[in-house]
Image (tube, rainbow, N blue to C red):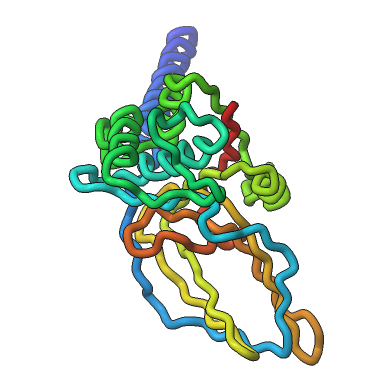
Amino acid sequence: MKKFAKFLTAVVLLALLSAFGTLAYASEAVTEERYVGAPAYSPRANEVINFTSRAVSLENYTAGKCPTYSRITGQPNSCGAVAGAEIVAFYDKYFPNLIPDWTSHYTNGNYRIQDRVYVPALLSELYTLMRTNVDDVGVSENDFKNGLKTYVNNHGCDIEYQSAKTLLGALNFDACRNAIDNNKVIALLVSAGELYSVSPHEGYDIITPTTIAGSHIMVAYGYMQLKYYNTNGLFRTDTYLIVATGLDAVTIGMYKIDAKNLNSAYIINIS
């Protein structure tokens, strides 16, 4: 009987060890999502919203309020570096040493377009610091955050990442709105999903979707809320963040705050 008990104990231990080994192997097999700056395309027809009246109930957005950069030749899968460069250039207005010997904005506060010397140099440095394409294509979330932090620290400033998601995983619009109203930007790390543009007309709006074909990093710097009314009253509310997309074809887009493809969102605090 004692031999059987020892045998049974050994079998149980072996089973547990096997199970834990399988779990450990499975855990090691899980790879962190990579952000590659996938191409964008329009996969479906525009949406037409007919209304008797439309109201812009919330808005903080002006053209030129954020840098809009794009990748450069020889740097594939570089959405992390592009988003990082936009963030650095945005805060260069408040901390001029972030981009030595160059000013990212005009005297009226609007940001300069991508030049041929300083922005490419910034992109290249961030591309390296973020270890782009080192472990796999693109960057991981940690690559992006750590590389940007290293750059900012190397230029005499500090950076903090404040999550802009709720405990349930949704985008915290109130936190984003407060950040934008206080001259901050938000890094959005998304899986494949959609951006929008709104073309206003008398009595109707045309909503044009643009699909991002893979995981991507963007920078939110504005917001807008549109409310649509018909004879029965309010029938639709669309709330967007305005983003610098980092894409080649569409540099500015509108990201719905209730989108399901959001992985992470960070309010950027540089001091």
